[in-house]
Length: 191
Image (tube, rainbow, N blue to C red; front, side, top):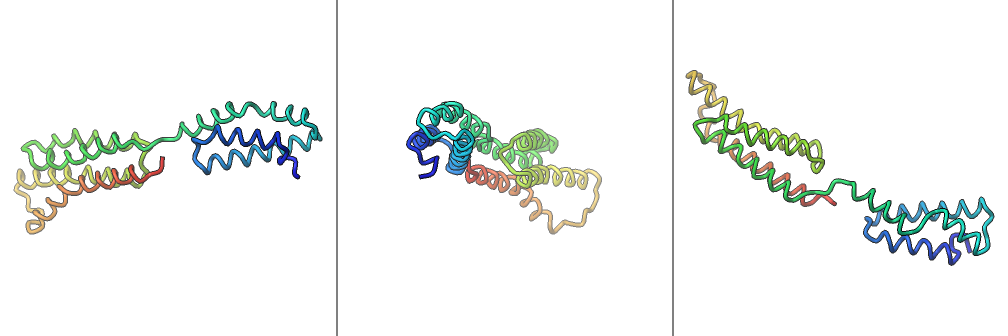
């Protein structure tokens, strides 16, 4: 029997395991392995073999509830995916194209574009790659509307007359597609 298989050590570790049931399995197993190693080292260093000596070592480690509360507090600090934030971003992205391209005032699209970009980059919910995708998708309709306005107002021929409709449709659909993508990433991302 190893020193950590002593009934008091096993009871202590079982209590920590019960109290940390809400932790992710990986974090919980890591915590228990660290505690078991710490108990083994402390018991060997103090040559603890009797029940009273083992109780003293375990008491110095702390109450299992305190250890669990500390571990749970650390894990709670991790960002959690927010479905509401993802849905709000989807709505903002969906608004960018119609407000930029289908109104007489394309600069109205700046409002949801700015909101979507701010909302996206202030969130720790998405990866940097996801944020770049969302940003590009938010800006494309505005850029298309500005290019269209410049072409119409200045009577400039941009050379994409035949592509105007497909590019315009792409600019309308792209923000919504990016919003759906970001929503799916938020739903799939582990908490």
